Figure 1 (cartoon, rainbow, N blue to C red):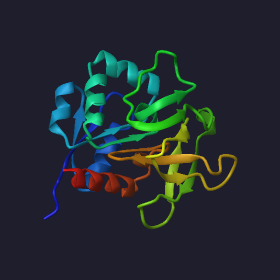
Figure 2: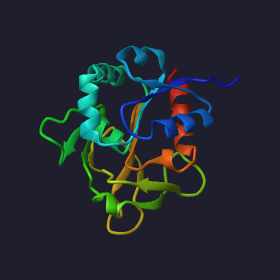
Figure 3: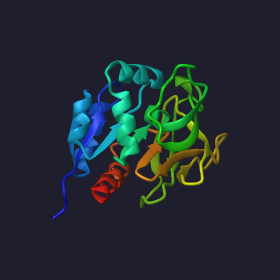
Length: 202
């Protein structure tokens, strides 16, 4: 019998409902994380997209930042999409001087690397560990990864265009992050990958 892990979605900003829907389609039970006490109820956490500086400020105000840091350090699986990738980065380029992150992935991320909202685009990404056709990556004011540490696995890169070769998906132990928004595609494969990560960690 396959377990049904409980996975929380940080409900500060972003496509929270869409993440919940894809988690449930991938075989997990999903809850909203609004308070530090919610973290103890889950076996994994998704950090949605949005505006990374706003999310980080509100996480500090709501008393969530330090508990999220401790959860990441303890090995709780986390997945960050777009702004969530920035939140999981140990280092940020083009961020606000006072911007805080959860950290945990040994990488340097550049905010808004692909340009402004008008430069948003969709492109197929071949993802390590995910079978089938290239994943339909939706990039909205997206970051990319400038540098990774020796323990970080590259899961996906841009395959064409001006940004060819740029890293847009990574994994560092129990933490994964993508520059793009799988929750906006209806494709469950990234969420299935994360749900399986959570099962294995449990």
